[in-house]
Structures are given as structure tokens and as C-alpha cells.
Amino acid sequence: MSNPFKNIELKYWPDFVLAISGISFVMVLGALIAGVTLPGGTLGWVLLFFGVIAFGVAGKHAHYRRHDKEIHKWVSAWRASFLSNILVLVSLGLIGGAVYVFAQNS
Image 1: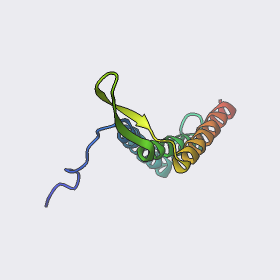
Image 2 (image 1 turned 135 degrees about the vertical axis):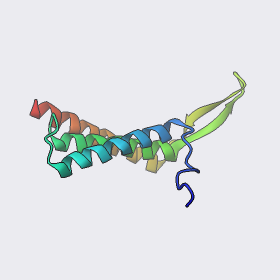
Image 3 (image 1 turned 90 degrees about the vertical axis):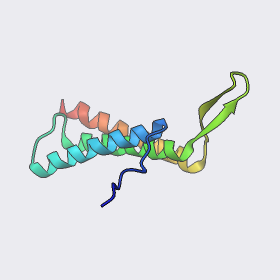
């Protein structure tokens, strides 16, 4: 049986955001199933991870590499589009909701 993860590459920052938030969300989901009470409330953690995942998806959609002629290097850039801008607004709303839930539960 071949390794299903052999073609996965973490090259740019959206890949790392999605990997870390996905692993963290699976851990929170496991805690929910086990009935563990998370500090600050479970709803806040779920909102936080969905917000980070939405930002990672927006970054994955908007990220591209361009060659900067002044410094003669390839740099990461953000291609603003309707979808990526909406996803950033959704992620800000979800993260703001998480902060509100954390503030109410402390």
C-alpha cells in the first residue's frame, strides 16, 4: 500500500495555516466527543478554528508568487478577489465571535 500523504507539500504560509488549524480542530472535536469541558467554552474554540480555517482557505485562494524586479527575488503576494475578500470578512467575524464568547465565559 502506498503512502497517501507522499504528494502533500507545505510550501507557503496558507498551507501551514490550514495544516495547523486542521490538526487543532480535530483535537477540539475529539474533546467534544469525549465530553471534555474546554477553557473559555467549546463554542469559542469551534468559532476560532473555523475562522482560522476560513482565513487559510482565503489565503490559499489569493496567494501567488511574483518576481520583484527591485530586489530580484520571488515574493509572496495577495491577489485580492471577491471570494478571498469575502472569506477574510467571514474569518474576521468568526474570530471576533470567538473572542466575544471567550470574554463572556471568563
